[in-house]
Length: 262
Image 1: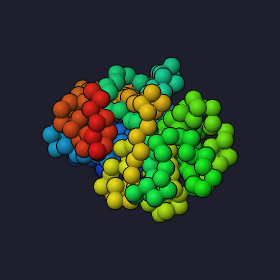
Image 2: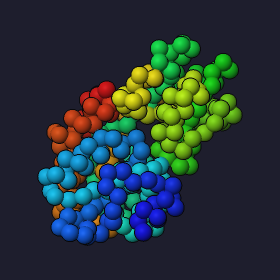
Image 3: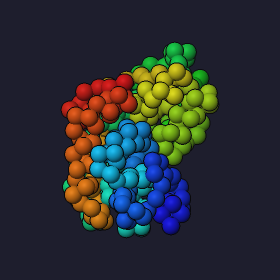
Image 4: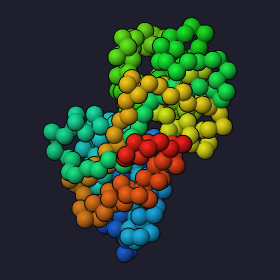
């Protein structure tokens, strides 16, 4: 039932696919709604927590807005981790959220083909170059598109980039897939994705001015639908603790204190 519901929102399950209620046997199952960019570190953290607590954690992955709507409709789940904090502010009044912790920071960058053969500068205005095939995320489906829109709106060029872009994609994974296939020269996307082991040999990240591309807090939010609030709180503490933070840095994220990884 849960897997079918998540598919209806275009979401997929990582880690263990099960139910969010009491598992068959002696293991409690828990459900994390996780933005695609953070799936790798959160999978690693979840696997460590599973062994320590004798639980199972299913991870529903997708665009941040799609994830929230799935959690809202299903009434199931233990945590929600969107790609930027605006989703917490936007949906706080709907009453689904409990306590939260910051587990790291997302930051946008320009991602180019390995070696930067087109000599792209670390400036979002490069997306307007006529000799480049540029792509960005869809602001309606996920955090990467929403943050791209915020940055480009700040420069007053979002409508121009939208007209210039070769195509839009729903999330950061789709952006990176297109870059690795050579379908684009440059993408405005989350910095950490360029450091993932299967992406790093194909692309480079060009750091943007942090005054323009401000680090965005990654808030691991406990959902009020959780049936296991003490376990949920322990998982949050683990993700925000020293081991969890080391994992986030290793996957190219800024940790909760702003220290860079990658």
